[in-house]
Image (cartoon, rainbow, N blue to C red):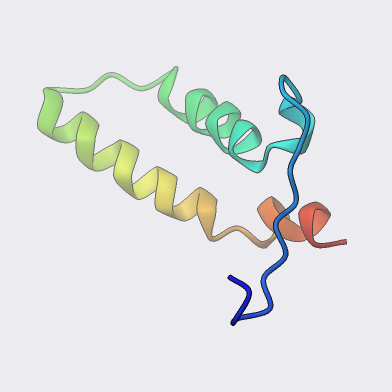
Length: 66
């Protein structure tokens, strides 16, 4: 990390508003809730595709970069 100029930022424990993954999980659960799956293969594919789509949303990271 030092060689790449990466600074670590430690967040306080139990701070979901500061942890980027928490908002992703909230959105993922919202997408999964109304959906009925035919089997675990379909569920796994849905979760993977939705997770990747949500990770790539710009709004997911904008507030974290400021």
